[in-house]
Image (tube, rainbow, N blue to C red; front, side):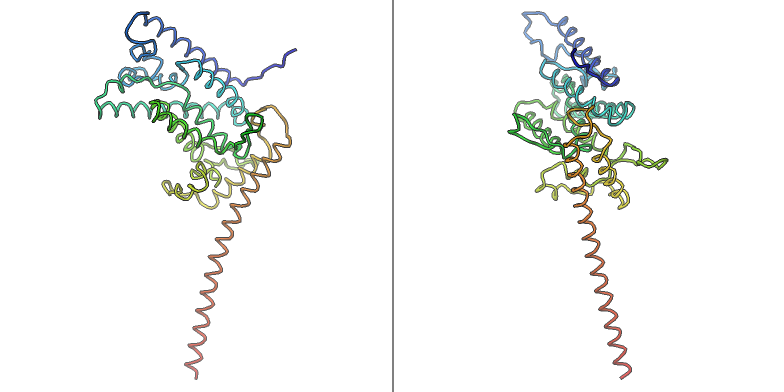
Length: 338
């Protein structure tokens, strides 16, 4: 008897939505297209503005900010997005709950699409390019980037081996590689829609997880934690270590020390238990889970040691200055008595 594949309800619904929207879009485009016409089947002349975002036409169809994320124009992108929703959705929905996963999906689809819509509208107004006004903004690129950011938060040190272990990469490096690949593709091959959606998807999902998503503190009846202040989820850590110093900018108001400590404890708790395995969402605690916990604890201890070392250095410097001032006062007082 073949094993039963258990898919959480929201993930199942997203897969069905992807299938329906993609098939419906292809059917409607094919009905509008006739063989022998000068424009190809993939031309923007056959866009369906009430399913995908088209800057010049979709303003009166606000629901397309959601549905366009589940419309793919070719088989390859359909399979990639389907695999993303199947594997990533199963993991995240079980790790967070269906309600929290639904909020994340809405944020990771509608906001990037809205930003891309505004980008192409502004591009059309500045360049007077009709091609930009009729660009079809669709696809699950933003969802793919958002899921990678979520994995970086939950299992940053998990290692993925491909080609029989020939290439091994940690999950924390995936968002940067994803952005690099889509940026190069946009510049070289002209896939600017995927370029914008990739960047908007990664940035908006990180902002949501870093500053806005609320999670239980872990204690009974304790207050919920807002965002993730752990140092390993800082924006600079999305980049290679040589570039992290250059990327560390105080664009937003920094978290307090208490928030950072709470975020580090929460990250350590995620590593120690409570989350399924990345490639086996229903799996139990195994050696990989223990290695993941050890790596997360090592990162948290390293960050804590750095902060304690900096605090000890500043305290020692202050104490030395205080002793020097006391010695000066004693010397001055002895001279007066003499």
